[in-house]
Length: 352
Image (cartoon, rainbow, N blue to C red):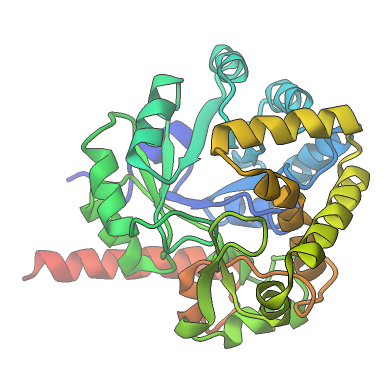
C-alpha cells in the first residue's frame, strides 16, 4: 500500500517528508535551512535579504551543514537577481523559490540546468500562469499566511488551484502540525509549507525578545495591515504598527525614504538598479506611487525585529498560527512530531 505521506513533492525535491520551510527574510539562514533539511523537511535559504555578492558563501555554508537537498528563495525583480540565479545553478542547488514578477528568461535557465522551480502564489490565476512559465511545484498561500497575503482562506484556495493545474501544489498559510498536513493532503495538496512554525524553532536566528512576542500572541493579536509597505500583510500587533496606523502622510513618507536609503546600503544596489526594481514591482503589483515608495519598509523594519531583536520598533510578519503556537522545539523535534501526528490521524481515519 502506498504511503500517503510520500508524495510527488518528495520525489521532485528528493526529500523524506512533504514539508517545506519557507524562505523568510532574516530568518531562513544557513543554520535554519540545514536544520530543516537534516530533519527530513526541505529548507529554503532566504536570498532576498542577502547581498548578491555574498550569496555564494551563504550557499556554501548550507552545504557544509547538510548533505540533504535544499533551495534558495529570491525576488526575480530585485537588484542582483541574475547573479543569485547564476549561483543557484553553479552550486547545484536543488530548487529555486520565487514569487512576484516571474522572469521567463531566468526560469528557462533553471529548467535547462535541472533546477526545480517552486514559485509561491496567492491566487488561482497566478498559479496557472506560474505553471505555464515552467513551475514544477507551486506553493499556494491562503490568507492565513504571514507577510504579504491575499483574502482567500487556504482551504478554499487549495481546492481551486488543484482543480486548475497539473503540477503538485504545496499548501501554505495556517499549518503547524500533523493534522494540518493530513488536511492539506485531503484538499488535494502534495505537502505543506510553513514559515511561522519554523521561525519558532531552536535553530531559528530570531532573538528571544522577538520570539517571545510571537509565542505570547493570541489569535486576536495577529491581523492584516497595509501600513508597513502599502500592501496587505499579516502581522503580530506591536508598538510600531500602532504608530504607523496613527501617523500622518508626511511621517510615513519620511520613514519610507529612510528605509529606502537603508535598503540601498544593505543590498549594495545602485540607485538606477533600485529605480528599475521599483518600477518593475509597481508594474507587476499595480502599485500606487506611495506604495512603491513604501516598498523598502518591509525588509528594513523586519530586520529590526528579526536580526536586531527589537520587536518594538521592528515589524513582526506572522501567519495566523502564531496565535496557537506555545513552544519552541528543534527542527528535528518539530518535523518528527508532525509526521507522527499525521500517521496517527491517518490511522484514526482508516478505522472509522
